[in-house]
Length: 529
Image 1 (cartoon, rainbow, N blue to C red):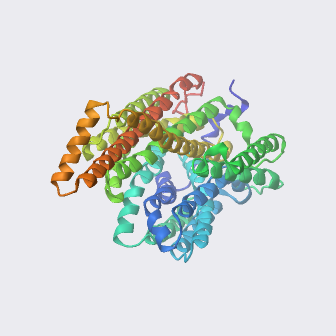
Image 2 (cartoon, rainbow, N blue to C red; image 1 turned 180 degrees about the vertical axis):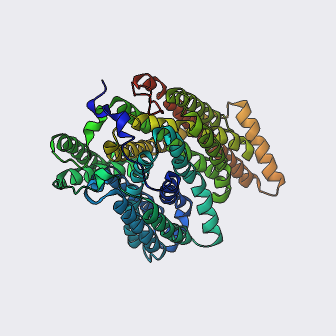
Image 3 (tube, one colour; image 1 turned 120 degrees about the horizontal axis):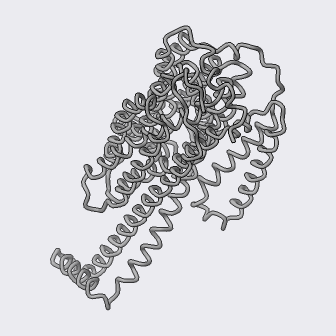
Protein backbone atom coordinates (compact mmCIF):
# COMPACT_ATOMS: atom_id res chain seq x y z
CA UNK A 1 0.00 0.00 0.00
CA UNK A 2 1.28 3.46 -0.89
CA UNK A 3 -0.24 6.13 1.32
CA UNK A 4 -1.56 9.49 0.39
CA UNK A 5 1.79 11.00 1.18
CA UNK A 6 2.87 10.01 -2.29
CA UNK A 7 0.09 11.88 -3.99
CA UNK A 8 1.35 14.81 -5.84
CA UNK A 9 4.91 13.71 -5.51
CA UNK A 10 5.57 14.44 -9.10
CA UNK A 11 4.19 17.97 -9.02
CA UNK A 12 5.56 18.75 -5.58
CA UNK A 13 9.14 18.63 -6.80
CA UNK A 14 8.69 21.35 -9.41
CA UNK A 15 6.87 23.98 -7.33
CA UNK A 16 9.92 26.01 -6.30
CA UNK A 17 13.57 26.41 -7.24
CA UNK A 18 16.26 28.54 -5.52
CA UNK A 19 17.24 31.89 -7.04
CA UNK A 20 20.97 30.96 -7.10
CA UNK A 21 22.78 28.14 -8.86
CA UNK A 22 21.87 24.91 -7.01
CA UNK A 23 25.51 23.80 -7.05
CA UNK A 24 26.39 26.77 -4.83
CA UNK A 25 23.74 25.48 -2.44
CA UNK A 26 25.27 22.00 -2.65
CA UNK A 27 28.76 23.34 -1.87
CA UNK A 28 27.42 25.22 1.16
CA UNK A 29 25.59 22.30 2.76
CA UNK A 30 28.29 19.78 1.88
CA UNK A 31 30.92 21.88 3.67
CA UNK A 32 28.84 21.92 6.86
CA UNK A 33 27.96 18.22 6.61
CA UNK A 34 31.54 17.16 5.97
CA UNK A 35 32.67 19.04 9.10
CA UNK A 36 30.04 17.32 11.26
CA UNK A 37 30.53 13.77 9.97
CA UNK A 38 34.31 14.12 10.12
CA UNK A 39 34.13 15.16 13.76
CA UNK A 40 32.13 12.05 14.65
CA UNK A 41 35.18 9.86 13.91
CA UNK A 42 38.23 12.11 14.08
CA UNK A 43 38.33 11.95 17.91
CA UNK A 44 38.43 8.13 18.07
CA UNK A 45 42.17 7.67 17.75
CA UNK A 46 42.87 10.58 20.14
CA UNK A 47 41.01 9.07 23.14
CA UNK A 48 44.15 7.75 24.91
CA UNK A 49 45.81 11.18 24.56
CA UNK A 50 42.67 12.96 25.79
CA UNK A 51 42.40 10.64 28.79
CA UNK A 52 46.06 11.19 29.67
CA UNK A 53 45.90 14.98 29.40
CA UNK A 54 42.72 15.32 31.45
CA UNK A 55 43.64 12.64 34.02
CA UNK A 56 40.72 10.39 33.10
CA UNK A 57 40.37 6.63 32.77
CA UNK A 58 39.80 4.92 29.43
CA UNK A 59 36.16 4.22 30.37
CA UNK A 60 35.59 7.89 31.22
CA UNK A 61 37.16 9.01 27.95
CA UNK A 62 34.63 7.00 25.91
CA UNK A 63 31.97 9.46 27.06
CA UNK A 64 33.65 11.92 24.69
CA UNK A 65 32.16 9.79 21.89
CA UNK A 66 28.94 8.70 23.63
CA UNK A 67 27.85 12.18 24.71
CA UNK A 68 28.18 13.40 21.12
CA UNK A 69 26.19 10.47 19.70
CA UNK A 70 23.35 10.86 22.22
CA UNK A 71 22.88 14.58 21.59
CA UNK A 72 23.23 14.03 17.85
CA UNK A 73 20.59 11.29 17.83
CA UNK A 74 18.09 13.42 19.76
CA UNK A 75 18.42 16.34 17.35
CA UNK A 76 18.16 14.30 14.13
CA UNK A 77 14.39 13.70 14.16
CA UNK A 78 13.63 17.02 15.88
CA UNK A 79 15.22 19.09 13.11
CA UNK A 80 12.16 18.88 10.84
CA UNK A 81 9.83 20.12 13.59
CA UNK A 82 12.13 23.01 14.58
CA UNK A 83 12.44 23.93 10.90
CA UNK A 84 8.68 24.48 10.68
CA UNK A 85 8.91 26.96 13.56
CA UNK A 86 11.98 29.06 12.72
CA UNK A 87 12.82 28.22 9.09
CA UNK A 88 15.45 25.98 7.56
CA UNK A 89 18.09 28.61 6.81
CA UNK A 90 17.94 30.07 10.30
CA UNK A 91 18.17 26.64 11.94
CA UNK A 92 21.12 25.66 9.75
CA UNK A 93 23.00 28.84 10.65
CA UNK A 94 22.25 28.36 14.36
CA UNK A 95 23.42 24.73 14.11
CA UNK A 96 26.69 25.73 12.44
CA UNK A 97 27.25 28.45 15.04
CA UNK A 98 26.58 26.08 17.96
CA UNK A 99 28.82 23.38 16.48
CA UNK A 100 31.69 25.77 15.77
CA UNK A 101 31.47 27.44 19.19
CA UNK A 102 31.35 24.02 20.89
CA UNK A 103 34.46 22.98 18.94
CA UNK A 104 36.32 25.92 20.48
CA UNK A 105 35.12 24.88 23.96
CA UNK A 106 36.31 21.31 23.30
CA UNK A 107 39.76 22.57 22.40
CA UNK A 108 40.16 24.70 25.54
CA UNK A 109 38.60 22.11 27.93
CA UNK A 110 40.53 21.86 31.20
CA UNK A 111 38.79 18.75 32.58
CA UNK A 112 36.65 15.84 31.42
CA UNK A 113 33.23 17.24 32.52
CA UNK A 114 33.87 20.43 30.53
CA UNK A 115 34.87 18.42 27.46
CA UNK A 116 31.79 16.17 27.73
CA UNK A 117 29.44 19.18 28.01
CA UNK A 118 31.12 20.77 25.00
CA UNK A 119 30.67 17.52 23.05
CA UNK A 120 26.96 17.51 23.96
CA UNK A 121 26.69 20.99 22.43
CA UNK A 122 28.56 19.75 19.38
CA UNK A 123 26.09 16.89 19.02
CA UNK A 124 23.13 19.28 19.25
CA UNK A 125 24.57 21.47 16.52
CA UNK A 126 25.67 18.57 14.33
CA UNK A 127 22.39 16.66 14.65
CA UNK A 128 20.48 19.54 13.11
CA UNK A 129 22.79 19.90 10.12
CA UNK A 130 22.61 16.43 8.57
CA UNK A 131 18.85 16.21 7.81
CA UNK A 132 18.77 19.91 6.91
CA UNK A 133 21.52 19.46 4.32
CA UNK A 134 19.77 16.47 2.78
CA UNK A 135 16.35 18.14 2.51
CA UNK A 136 17.87 21.39 1.17
CA UNK A 137 19.63 19.48 -1.61
CA UNK A 138 16.56 17.47 -2.59
CA UNK A 139 14.41 20.61 -2.77
CA UNK A 140 16.99 22.79 -4.56
CA UNK A 141 17.58 20.45 -7.53
CA UNK A 142 15.05 19.34 -10.15
CA UNK A 143 14.33 15.57 -10.16
CA UNK A 144 16.60 14.92 -13.15
CA UNK A 145 19.62 16.24 -11.20
CA UNK A 146 18.83 14.92 -7.74
CA UNK A 147 21.02 11.84 -8.22
CA UNK A 148 24.07 13.97 -8.95
CA UNK A 149 23.25 16.23 -5.99
CA UNK A 150 22.97 13.29 -3.62
CA UNK A 151 26.29 11.98 -4.95
CA UNK A 152 27.94 15.25 -3.90
CA UNK A 153 26.29 15.02 -0.49
CA UNK A 154 27.27 11.37 -0.24
CA UNK A 155 30.94 12.24 -0.67
CA UNK A 156 30.76 14.07 2.65
CA UNK A 157 28.79 11.32 4.40
CA UNK A 158 30.83 8.36 3.14
CA UNK A 159 34.35 9.79 2.81
CA UNK A 160 34.54 11.84 6.03
CA UNK A 161 34.37 8.85 8.43
CA UNK A 162 37.09 7.16 6.39
CA UNK A 163 39.66 9.96 6.52
CA UNK A 164 38.68 10.93 10.07
CA UNK A 165 40.87 8.39 11.92
CA UNK A 166 43.86 9.09 9.65
CA UNK A 167 43.55 12.85 10.03
CA UNK A 168 42.95 12.55 13.77
CA UNK A 169 45.99 10.30 14.21
CA UNK A 170 48.25 12.64 12.23
CA UNK A 171 47.08 15.77 14.05
CA UNK A 172 47.37 14.10 17.47
CA UNK A 173 50.86 12.74 16.77
CA UNK A 174 52.16 15.92 15.10
CA UNK A 175 50.52 18.63 17.20
CA UNK A 176 47.94 18.04 19.97
CA UNK A 177 44.53 16.42 20.29
CA UNK A 178 43.09 19.92 20.85
CA UNK A 179 43.73 20.77 17.20
CA UNK A 180 41.25 18.13 16.02
CA UNK A 181 38.62 20.54 17.37
CA UNK A 182 40.32 23.82 16.46
CA UNK A 183 40.35 22.92 12.75
CA UNK A 184 36.55 23.24 12.77
CA UNK A 185 36.72 27.00 13.42
CA UNK A 186 37.70 28.25 9.91
CA UNK A 187 35.52 25.61 8.24
CA UNK A 188 32.53 26.59 10.38
CA UNK A 189 32.96 30.31 9.68
CA UNK A 190 33.17 29.67 5.93
CA UNK A 191 30.07 27.43 6.09
CA UNK A 192 28.19 30.19 7.97
CA UNK A 193 29.12 32.75 5.31
CA UNK A 194 28.11 30.52 2.38
CA UNK A 195 24.85 29.49 4.06
CA UNK A 196 23.87 33.10 4.64
CA UNK A 197 24.76 34.02 1.07
CA UNK A 198 23.33 31.15 -0.98
CA UNK A 199 20.63 29.29 0.95
CA UNK A 200 17.00 30.43 1.14
CA UNK A 201 13.80 28.98 2.52
CA UNK A 202 11.07 27.72 0.16
CA UNK A 203 7.73 29.61 0.30
CA UNK A 204 5.94 27.06 2.50
CA UNK A 205 8.56 27.56 5.24
CA UNK A 206 8.20 31.35 5.19
CA UNK A 207 4.71 31.13 6.62
CA UNK A 208 4.52 31.59 10.38
CA UNK A 209 3.96 28.33 12.23
CA UNK A 210 1.34 28.55 14.98
CA UNK A 211 1.32 24.98 16.32
CA UNK A 212 1.82 24.10 19.98
CA UNK A 213 5.19 22.85 21.24
CA UNK A 214 5.29 19.08 21.72
CA UNK A 215 7.26 19.12 24.98
CA UNK A 216 6.11 15.63 26.01
CA UNK A 217 7.04 14.09 22.67
CA UNK A 218 10.49 15.70 22.74
CA UNK A 219 11.07 14.59 26.34
CA UNK A 220 10.08 10.99 25.64
CA UNK A 221 12.29 10.93 22.54
CA UNK A 222 15.27 12.27 24.51
CA UNK A 223 14.80 9.64 27.25
CA UNK A 224 14.34 6.82 24.73
CA UNK A 225 17.40 7.66 22.62
CA UNK A 226 19.59 8.60 25.57
CA UNK A 227 18.91 5.39 27.51
CA UNK A 228 19.26 3.25 24.38
CA UNK A 229 22.67 4.73 23.59
CA UNK A 230 23.74 4.25 27.21
CA UNK A 231 22.79 0.55 27.13
CA UNK A 232 24.52 -0.02 23.78
CA UNK A 233 27.65 1.80 24.87
CA UNK A 234 28.06 0.20 28.31
CA UNK A 235 26.26 -3.13 27.84
CA UNK A 236 29.24 -5.34 27.08
CA UNK A 237 31.31 -3.72 29.81
CA UNK A 238 28.54 -4.46 32.36
CA UNK A 239 27.87 -7.99 31.01
CA UNK A 240 24.55 -6.85 29.56
CA UNK A 241 21.44 -8.07 31.38
CA UNK A 242 23.45 -9.69 34.16
CA UNK A 243 23.75 -6.14 35.55
CA UNK A 244 20.67 -4.86 37.38
CA UNK A 245 21.14 -1.26 36.22
CA UNK A 246 21.19 -2.39 32.59
CA UNK A 247 17.82 -4.11 33.08
CA UNK A 248 16.37 -0.99 34.73
CA UNK A 249 17.64 1.37 32.03
CA UNK A 250 16.39 -0.98 29.29
CA UNK A 251 12.92 -1.01 30.87
CA UNK A 252 12.94 2.81 30.99
CA UNK A 253 14.04 2.89 27.34
CA UNK A 254 11.24 0.53 26.25
CA UNK A 255 8.57 2.47 28.20
CA UNK A 256 9.80 5.80 26.78
CA UNK A 257 9.77 4.37 23.24
CA UNK A 258 6.19 3.09 23.54
CA UNK A 259 5.09 6.40 25.04
CA UNK A 260 6.87 8.33 22.30
CA UNK A 261 5.20 6.36 19.49
CA UNK A 262 1.76 6.70 21.11
CA UNK A 263 2.26 10.43 21.62
CA UNK A 264 3.45 11.13 18.07
CA UNK A 265 0.57 9.16 16.51
CA UNK A 266 -2.10 10.99 18.55
CA UNK A 267 -0.75 14.56 18.85
CA UNK A 268 -1.97 17.14 16.32
CA UNK A 269 1.48 18.71 15.92
CA UNK A 270 3.98 15.92 16.73
CA UNK A 271 7.69 16.65 16.87
CA UNK A 272 8.23 13.64 14.58
CA UNK A 273 5.54 12.80 12.02
CA UNK A 274 5.65 9.00 12.18
CA UNK A 275 2.76 8.67 9.72
CA UNK A 276 5.25 9.36 6.96
CA UNK A 277 6.31 5.72 7.39
CA UNK A 278 3.01 4.79 5.69
CA UNK A 279 4.79 5.69 2.46
CA UNK A 280 6.02 2.28 1.34
CA UNK A 281 9.16 3.45 -0.46
CA UNK A 282 10.22 5.55 2.52
CA UNK A 283 9.47 2.82 5.06
CA UNK A 284 11.43 0.19 3.13
CA UNK A 285 14.26 2.65 2.43
CA UNK A 286 14.46 3.46 6.14
CA UNK A 287 14.66 -0.25 7.01
CA UNK A 288 17.44 -0.76 4.45
CA UNK A 289 19.42 2.24 5.70
CA UNK A 290 19.22 0.87 9.26
CA UNK A 291 20.55 -2.53 8.11
CA UNK A 292 23.24 -0.88 6.02
CA UNK A 293 24.17 1.36 8.97
CA UNK A 294 24.66 -1.82 11.01
CA UNK A 295 27.03 -3.21 8.38
CA UNK A 296 28.88 0.01 7.53
CA UNK A 297 29.56 1.14 11.09
CA UNK A 298 30.43 -2.43 12.07
CA UNK A 299 33.13 -2.68 9.40
CA UNK A 300 34.59 0.76 10.10
CA UNK A 301 34.72 -0.01 13.84
CA UNK A 302 36.24 -3.50 13.50
CA UNK A 303 38.98 -2.96 10.94
CA UNK A 304 41.06 -0.29 12.78
CA UNK A 305 40.78 -2.37 15.97
CA UNK A 306 42.01 -5.47 14.13
CA UNK A 307 44.95 -3.64 12.60
CA UNK A 308 46.03 -2.11 15.92
CA UNK A 309 45.37 -4.96 18.38
CA UNK A 310 46.16 -8.02 16.25
CA UNK A 311 48.53 -6.75 13.56
CA UNK A 312 50.32 -4.20 15.80
CA UNK A 313 49.76 -1.16 13.54
CA UNK A 314 50.03 2.34 15.01
CA UNK A 315 46.95 4.59 15.00
CA UNK A 316 48.27 6.49 11.98
CA UNK A 317 49.23 3.34 10.04
CA UNK A 318 45.83 1.75 10.66
CA UNK A 319 44.19 4.92 9.39
CA UNK A 320 46.34 4.82 6.26
CA UNK A 321 45.38 1.18 5.65
CA UNK A 322 41.67 2.06 5.87
CA UNK A 323 41.90 5.27 3.82
CA UNK A 324 41.79 3.59 0.35
CA UNK A 325 38.14 2.94 1.12
CA UNK A 326 37.62 6.66 0.46
CA UNK A 327 39.09 6.32 -3.04
CA UNK A 328 36.54 3.63 -3.87
CA UNK A 329 33.72 5.77 -2.49
CA UNK A 330 34.80 8.82 -4.51
CA UNK A 331 34.98 6.80 -7.73
CA UNK A 332 31.55 5.27 -7.10
CA UNK A 333 29.92 8.62 -6.31
CA UNK A 334 31.08 10.10 -9.60
CA UNK A 335 29.71 7.11 -11.55
CA UNK A 336 26.45 6.51 -9.71
CA UNK A 337 25.48 10.19 -9.72
CA UNK A 338 25.05 9.82 -13.50
CA UNK A 339 23.74 6.25 -13.65
CA UNK A 340 20.93 6.89 -11.16
CA UNK A 341 19.17 9.03 -13.79
CA UNK A 342 19.12 6.20 -16.33
CA UNK A 343 19.25 2.92 -14.40
CA UNK A 344 16.61 1.63 -12.00
CA UNK A 345 17.77 2.48 -8.46
CA UNK A 346 16.84 -1.04 -7.35
CA UNK A 347 19.39 -2.53 -9.76
CA UNK A 348 22.12 -0.17 -8.54
CA UNK A 349 21.22 -0.98 -4.95
CA UNK A 350 21.33 -4.71 -5.60
CA UNK A 351 24.78 -4.41 -7.18
CA UNK A 352 26.03 -2.21 -4.36
CA UNK A 353 24.75 -4.50 -1.58
CA UNK A 354 26.20 -7.59 -3.27
CA UNK A 355 29.57 -5.89 -3.75
CA UNK A 356 29.60 -4.67 -0.16
CA UNK A 357 28.83 -8.16 1.17
CA UNK A 358 31.52 -9.76 -1.04
CA UNK A 359 34.23 -7.26 -0.08
CA UNK A 360 33.38 -7.64 3.61
CA UNK A 361 33.60 -11.41 3.22
CA UNK A 362 37.10 -10.96 1.73
CA UNK A 363 38.11 -9.23 4.97
CA UNK A 364 37.14 -12.40 6.86
CA UNK A 365 39.90 -14.28 4.98
CA UNK A 366 42.80 -12.09 6.15
CA UNK A 367 45.46 -13.68 8.36
CA UNK A 368 48.45 -12.65 10.46
CA UNK A 369 50.79 -12.68 7.48
CA UNK A 370 48.93 -10.27 5.18
CA UNK A 371 50.45 -7.02 3.94
CA UNK A 372 48.84 -3.60 4.03
CA UNK A 373 47.94 -4.04 0.36
CA UNK A 374 45.89 -7.14 1.17
CA UNK A 375 43.80 -4.98 3.50
CA UNK A 376 43.58 -2.03 1.11
CA UNK A 377 42.09 -3.92 -1.87
CA UNK A 378 38.97 -5.19 -0.05
CA UNK A 379 38.63 -1.69 1.42
CA UNK A 380 38.59 -0.09 -2.01
CA UNK A 381 35.93 -2.57 -3.16
CA UNK A 382 33.98 -1.98 0.06
CA UNK A 383 34.01 1.79 -0.43
CA UNK A 384 33.08 1.51 -4.11
CA UNK A 385 30.12 -0.73 -3.29
CA UNK A 386 29.02 1.60 -0.50
CA UNK A 387 28.87 4.47 -2.98
CA UNK A 388 26.45 2.43 -5.09
CA UNK A 389 24.17 2.08 -2.07
CA UNK A 390 23.93 5.56 -0.59
CA UNK A 391 22.81 7.62 -3.59
CA UNK A 392 20.13 5.33 -5.12
CA UNK A 393 18.83 4.41 -1.66
CA UNK A 394 18.29 8.05 -0.70
CA UNK A 395 16.65 9.01 -4.00
CA UNK A 396 14.44 5.92 -3.88
CA UNK A 397 13.34 6.53 -0.28
CA UNK A 398 12.66 10.27 -0.72
CA UNK A 399 11.64 10.36 -4.38
CA UNK A 400 7.91 9.80 -3.81
CA UNK A 401 7.47 12.33 -1.00
CA UNK A 402 6.13 15.85 -1.26
CA UNK A 403 8.64 18.62 -0.62
CA UNK A 404 6.83 19.57 2.57
CA UNK A 405 7.51 16.06 3.92
CA UNK A 406 11.20 15.82 3.04
CA UNK A 407 12.53 17.74 6.06
CA UNK A 408 10.82 15.47 8.60
CA UNK A 409 11.62 12.38 6.53
CA UNK A 410 15.33 13.23 6.35
CA UNK A 411 15.51 13.41 10.15
CA UNK A 412 13.87 9.99 10.59
CA UNK A 413 15.99 8.50 7.79
CA UNK A 414 19.30 9.69 9.26
CA UNK A 415 18.24 8.71 12.77
CA UNK A 416 17.59 5.11 11.69
CA UNK A 417 20.99 4.91 9.99
CA UNK A 418 22.66 6.10 13.21
CA UNK A 419 20.61 3.68 15.34
CA UNK A 420 21.56 0.84 13.01
CA UNK A 421 25.19 1.88 13.35
CA UNK A 422 25.00 2.02 17.15
CA UNK A 423 23.40 -1.44 17.30
CA UNK A 424 25.99 -2.73 14.83
CA UNK A 425 28.95 -1.46 16.85
CA UNK A 426 27.51 -2.86 20.09
CA UNK A 427 26.77 -6.22 18.44
CA UNK A 428 30.16 -6.75 16.81
CA UNK A 429 31.97 -5.57 19.97
CA UNK A 430 30.08 -8.12 22.06
CA UNK A 431 30.56 -10.93 19.54
CA UNK A 432 34.24 -10.04 19.25
CA UNK A 433 34.92 -10.35 22.97
CA UNK A 434 32.85 -13.50 23.47
CA UNK A 435 33.99 -15.09 20.21
CA UNK A 436 37.64 -14.61 21.19
CA UNK A 437 36.95 -16.32 24.53
CA UNK A 438 35.23 -19.24 22.80
CA UNK A 439 38.02 -19.72 20.25
CA UNK A 440 40.66 -19.41 22.95
CA UNK A 441 39.03 -22.15 25.02
CA UNK A 442 38.85 -24.41 21.97
CA UNK A 443 42.46 -23.80 20.91
CA UNK A 444 43.83 -24.12 24.44
CA UNK A 445 42.04 -27.45 24.89
CA UNK A 446 44.18 -28.87 22.08
CA UNK A 447 47.48 -27.70 23.55
CA UNK A 448 48.23 -30.73 25.74
CA UNK A 449 51.13 -33.06 26.41
CA UNK A 450 49.40 -35.72 24.31
CA UNK A 451 49.35 -33.48 21.23
CA UNK A 452 52.60 -34.15 19.29
CA UNK A 453 52.34 -30.89 17.30
CA UNK A 454 51.91 -28.79 20.44
CA UNK A 455 54.76 -30.58 22.21
CA UNK A 456 57.07 -30.14 19.22
CA UNK A 457 56.33 -26.40 19.17
CA UNK A 458 56.88 -26.13 22.93
CA UNK A 459 60.18 -27.98 22.84
CA UNK A 460 61.40 -25.92 19.88
CA UNK A 461 60.61 -22.65 21.67
CA UNK A 462 62.15 -23.89 24.90
CA UNK A 463 65.37 -24.80 23.09
CA UNK A 464 65.47 -21.41 21.35
CA UNK A 465 65.11 -19.48 24.62
CA UNK A 466 67.64 -21.75 26.35
CA UNK A 467 70.25 -21.22 23.64
CA UNK A 468 69.47 -17.50 23.86
CA UNK A 469 70.85 -17.43 27.38
CA UNK A 470 67.83 -18.24 29.58
CA UNK A 471 68.01 -20.81 32.31
CA UNK A 472 66.13 -24.09 31.90
CA UNK A 473 63.19 -23.05 34.11
CA UNK A 474 63.04 -19.54 32.58
CA UNK A 475 63.14 -20.98 29.05
CA UNK A 476 60.24 -23.27 29.94
CA UNK A 477 58.16 -20.35 31.28
CA UNK A 478 58.95 -18.15 28.27
CA UNK A 479 58.01 -20.98 25.88
CA UNK A 480 54.65 -21.43 27.65
CA UNK A 481 54.08 -17.66 27.54
CA UNK A 482 54.86 -17.53 23.81
CA UNK A 483 52.40 -20.35 23.09
CA UNK A 484 49.70 -18.64 25.17
CA UNK A 485 50.22 -15.32 23.35
CA UNK A 486 49.97 -17.13 20.04
CA UNK A 487 46.72 -18.78 21.15
CA UNK A 488 45.29 -15.38 22.13
CA UNK A 489 46.34 -13.86 18.82
CA UNK A 490 44.85 -16.71 16.79
CA UNK A 491 41.63 -16.60 18.84
CA UNK A 492 41.28 -12.85 18.21
CA UNK A 493 41.92 -13.38 14.50
CA UNK A 494 39.18 -16.03 14.30
CA UNK A 495 36.76 -13.78 16.22
CA UNK A 496 37.37 -10.90 13.79
CA UNK A 497 36.85 -13.25 10.84
CA UNK A 498 33.54 -14.44 12.34
CA UNK A 499 32.34 -10.86 12.70
CA UNK A 500 33.26 -9.87 9.15
CA UNK A 501 31.31 -12.89 7.87
CA UNK A 502 28.34 -11.91 10.06
CA UNK A 503 28.35 -8.39 8.61
CA UNK A 504 28.54 -9.78 5.07
CA UNK A 505 25.49 -11.98 5.67
CA UNK A 506 23.60 -9.12 7.38
CA UNK A 507 24.20 -6.95 4.31
CA UNK A 508 22.51 -9.51 2.07
CA UNK A 509 19.30 -9.21 4.14
CA UNK A 510 18.72 -5.87 2.37
CA UNK A 511 18.26 -7.49 -1.05
CA UNK A 512 14.83 -9.15 -0.45
CA UNK A 513 13.46 -5.77 0.69
CA UNK A 514 14.08 -4.30 -2.77
CA UNK A 515 11.08 -6.16 -4.21
CA UNK A 516 8.80 -4.10 -1.93
CA UNK A 517 9.67 -0.72 -3.44
CA UNK A 518 8.45 0.94 -6.62
CA UNK A 519 10.65 2.69 -9.14
CA UNK A 520 11.15 6.45 -8.81
CA UNK A 521 11.26 8.25 -12.14
CA UNK A 522 13.94 10.91 -12.55
CA UNK A 523 12.20 12.83 -15.33
CA UNK A 524 9.47 15.25 -14.26
CA UNK A 525 7.57 14.31 -17.40
CA UNK A 526 7.11 10.77 -16.18
CA UNK A 527 4.61 10.43 -13.34
CA UNK A 528 5.57 8.12 -10.49
CA UNK A 529 3.98 4.73 -10.64
